[in-house]
Length: 314
Image (tube, rainbow, N blue to C red; front, side, top):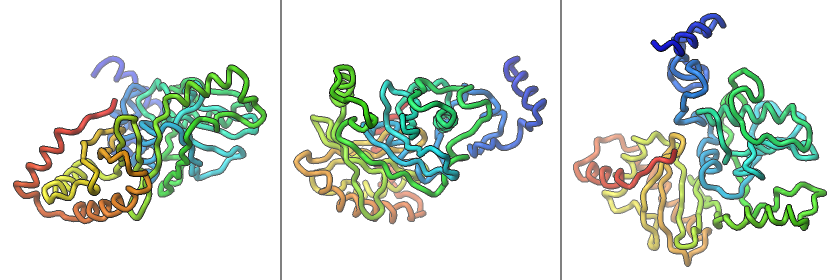
């Protein structure tokens, strides 16, 4: 055992913590191998256990301009919303009217995004209107380890509202025509890729994105990767992996412990025209996920083929 780890274990014992007990964060690891190991431990699936997990991953990774009310168990005096990105990539800010906004696309100094957002919220609850938190990390919002899993209603999904620009950044009473404010908005708006939610029966956290050269559907899936890959392999072997004519399965990327399948889409079709094909695919996928029989030789080959089209976002 390294000197650093001996000190951590001794400190935990002095505080009455059993380093061999399950970590209270719900990761399934022992405390000494998780939050008891210090803030440098990377939590690979930080939002696990929350119905909002796919939405949080989408807001962190690819939604350009979106805001959603945070489903807190206990409501404070100030309303709280979570945003894809805030001015200056701030971790949190308190509007002049007291509303709290928490940012997802931020710099971080810890390996636990769930704890980072909870720290930012704790900071904002004590901050004055008009204050902003640039970077969140250990020590911000108090020394106690609190995570979103401790604060949110577990079975409540997020309901992100998407915007075509960042005009919602401007608080009431601020002159958005001033040169500084106008320049900030222009820079932020210039990098937005048109994005719309694709909704339907069985469809959540699926988003149509126009990158300029192509249109894509990015669909954050909550299932364990092994089960999802087996289901996708069954569909691929059956020739049912595409959404419909005008789509092509492009691959998938991993983000914060979840797999995000991606389809290339016909840019001539509007986002709403993919709602019905997505719902039909959701039904096929649910049936494939429920199939517990061993994969056939053809299906194993299909799984290997689509596994080669995956990347991991760090």
